[in-house]
Amino acid sequence: MKSVRLAWIPVVLIFVSTAFGQLSMQNNLPYHDLIFPQLAAGGQYETWMTVTNHGTHTWGGTFYFYRNQGEPWNPIVNGVQISNGILPVSIMSQETKTFKVTQASLASGFVVAKEDTATGFFIHFLEGNLSYYVSSGGAVTDSVGVMPSKEVLAASLPFEDFSTMTYAVANTNADLRSAHVKFRLLDATGTQQGQTITRTMAPLEHKAEYFSQLFPNVPGTFKRGRLDVESDVPISGMALMFMPGSQMSSLPFGSTTRVYYPIDSYGDVHLKEMTLWTEGLFVNGYIVVYHGTDPTVTMTVSGDIREGKLHLNFGGILPAGGIEYTVYGYIIADDAYDPTSAMFTGECYVTFADVNWNESFEFTAYLND
Image (cartoon, rainbow, N blue to C red; front, top):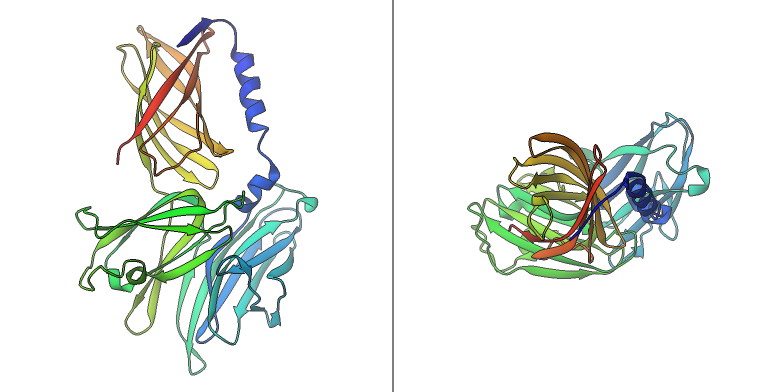
């Protein structure tokens, strides 16, 4: 515990600004534009990507296509076969374009859109969606729309019928690290079915299969439940439900929450509970804070994951001794953040802005799982 009374608000602001300044453009690139973790082409399938540039400048960049172990994938896009998995793209301000992905034989992969930083990074963004088209005898028999993927560390996917479910994941993390992905299957009561499956995915590796292939020992009579997915680096994913008659629908593969109960040491300010969820390197959630025996206060928390570590900010009005103070807090974890870990440790820095009072303390956060 280190408690010091001084005018250190400017120091805190400099510290936080310096820390955030360490974010590099390279680390942000994969989270900046679009990721579609499953494209299907060939046979009866076509994939159409429709994107728009809602910015005020031309978007110039590249669509990178990958499959299997991260090898370049060269499907036909708008009638022309690409090479080396690379499709240069230019989209003018307010323009909308569709990219039709086809090929002769059935194959699947994923695509990541990256803007060329030379054209003006953070000035404009791509927005879009993806549609699968299923044809029979030259006529479209089914179609389904899919939103872009948000990179996650942990996801939870509820479903109605195990036998109809498929998933696709891609290791799209910015640092090109291998991902260790855990899959857990739970029934409608939350009881785990079978063993936890762990897959190591190389950088840019793509994997797509039925739930029944992932869990071959689960009986076909299994119906309602959920799939929990956890990774030590950001991954992208999606799920599809295939019904009789070749009908299909997409299901969201969004980030799920992690709830922690911190145990801090010393100090007058305490952390009681944290709820966090991630989208790529960005983190959001809530934190419960209290002072001494005063009432608890729930504040929003936001931040990012830098060099694998959590960096979080929170702030709000905190009662202390019958007076309400404006407080600001900053949390940094000691080690790389892994949502599968039962705990993590770190330090918390808190300032009472009204009276220039500073506290800092160490804490241990335990996963409520």
